[in-house]
Length: 274
Image (tube, rainbow, N blue to C red; front, side, top):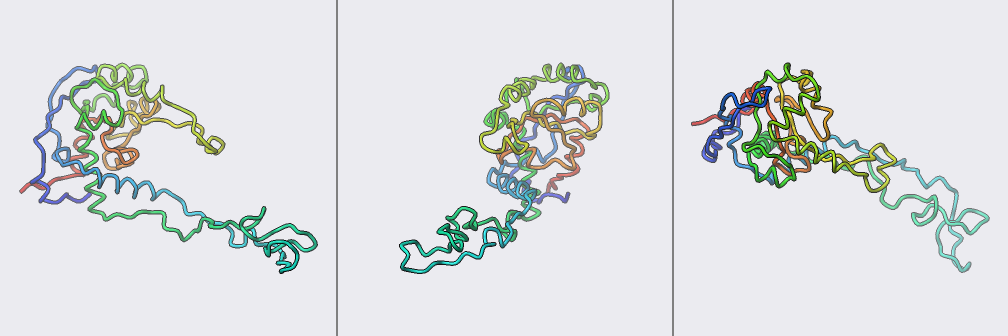
């Protein structure tokens, strides 16, 4: 992705220094987060980019133009003590009109309706970077409802965990030491039934979002171990987007990043300083 404007350097916050944890949950180093994590958080822009990415996945749908119109019904005209709506021949049963059973729909969905809200490329780039910067603010993360005891965010772990932590049990133990496993428990406890007919259409449950893992390899043993935990998402630096960083358009998702993925994010979102 292209570089962000040089003028944004005037609005960068103070450098963010966070600890780096090993596969055992011990602090082994400290790292200065890339400049993209210092950008101001634009909630309005994040919401706009979220709507654009969310609506991009919607599939246009419409109705048969002749639906509810396949009838030879005609109006009986005046003088019968009945409304002048089309009626089936030989009966007084109404047809064709939208208030009649089996009639046409009043305002049916149309294929030509514009569903996708488009945004400029630079807006999308800046909105994604701004959502990434929001992951460093504990106040915004708590505002989203996440539970954690980690002192600094995002949580950075050494890339060695991708190979050394390969089981779900070991991954849970690591998350407990990092102080973020409470959020997985929250997501599990808050799984609930969906209200409405969506229950009959393959959407029976609503699952809260918990931790977002940004790793350089989604097929690594660690990524495979954590992806089945309640509410967890796993993404690579090149593909992470606002849908994952700010579900519902609300920034501040609880995030765990590996050191290798951190370098990938730095390469993707370079801020050119004067």
